[in-house]
Length: 215
Image (cartoon, rainbow, N blue to C red; front, side, top):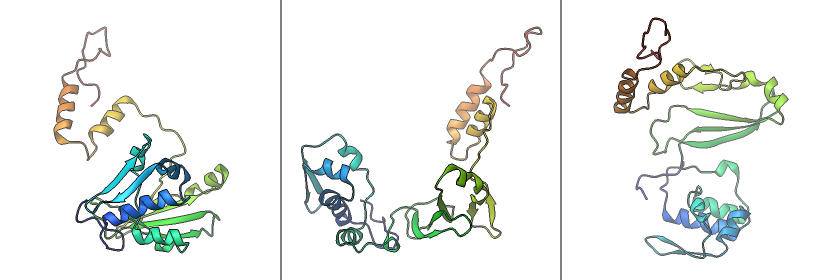
């Protein structure tokens, strides 16, 4: 485990949190499918590591990717004292609140940036998720859906497109090549490949060959 991994309250993530998570999944009905898979598995704390032994289902590989929870939170779930406002996250965002939106009457939860996260490149300050009861309710309130960016002047943009938009092949390629996350060396290689490729002529009468119709 990395030494700098922290929960949203600033405490470090430990092996005890992992052990408590899997014991909770094995001993309680919080997630019955996972409980069934862990039924034939023995989980032991061996000091430097946690040992899983027994007749394993292939789905154990998926369970090892299951999110863990803090030991203290696991204990609260066991004794029935857990509340949403005591939830802890190890990711870039943490639960803020749950409420009913006055205008639409829909359930809404808010996630805010986790100041103790080890993740970098987290630029959106807050996410708000709305849960609509039916498609008509969603469509009638689509103007309330947006993304808010933490700038000096709050800007909102529509986050849902309800009408289709047909991209042309060159537009797809341009969007891909202009992606900021594309490795510069890979971009150069792709541009070189496209530039040197000969495509069928768009004007067969004149015999012209267009080497790069995309730009």
